[in-house]
Image 1 (cartoon, rainbow, N blue to C red):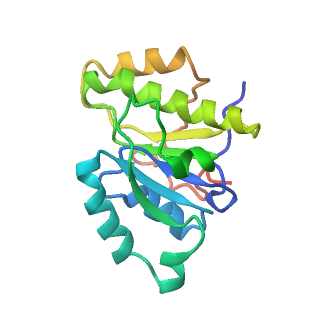
Image 2: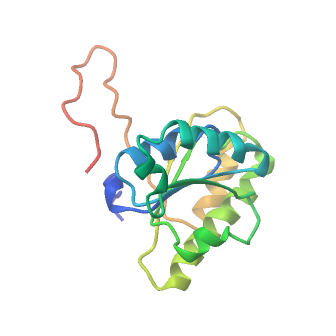
Length: 173
């Protein structure tokens, strides 16, 4: 398989897993995602709700059908939130979530649940895009586990090598 091109966010319903502050999902919403649930542990959802409200550009944005919303999604829990199950996302985004080896298997289980939800709905498979910074010598275990279930591609770093000219394009379609 050839690596996929980065998707046009506006063509997708997006979900952010392990959202933390929700910045990635909020950016997807700003880029026109049809919906952008921000998910994390239940104790993080108040922060996500606040950030979503602070970043709503108008009352219409906040009330838009499917718009930005926060919901709890503990990794490994096979029960997806009802709103996610009802409209499974076509694009899953994650950033800086692979740092604790105890979370690797639950994260893969949640990703598999999202893929199954799309299959159950009879729609095209979802695309999973993850930004990762190596922090733990055990990180490879996550990628080995994920590779058992997903076709994985590493996208090239768009930053220029030291001393080379800046790129003219970023790898987004």
